[in-house]
Image 1 (tube, one colour):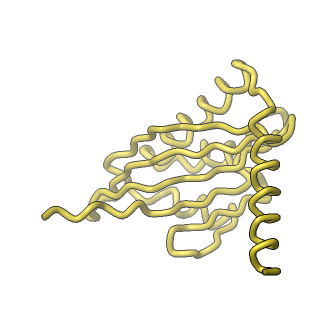
Image 2: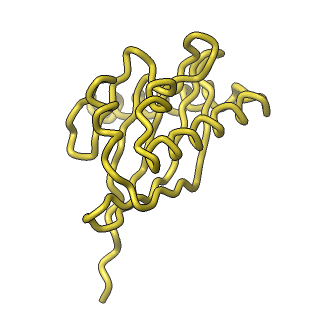
Length: 149
């Protein structure tokens, strides 16, 4: 019985937290800024532009790959030099957590040179740093393709 009440309590807390996040409005200006940063990240990846990525990444960056590996900013800037043949974003959703913190969640379909195309769900935490939105954390999860019968 305790487990049931604990699970119900956890569920209610999660719902209340979700309402508190979604209740905060994102202004069109901030939404535009974040979407521009997401586009800039796409450009950085397509052109292996570590200088642009450096401007997008927060100094305390923590990336987590779909394999569960963690990367700091230094390693992420080295990895940006991997060659992409394609990189497309869709289904972008933004949540305001605080005046200086926004979470973005979207699908990213990309293809590395010499590797098959893959779809990933990216959850990114954007934080204001030195006057612009920077990625402080990003988690990438591979979306399994449905098997063809």
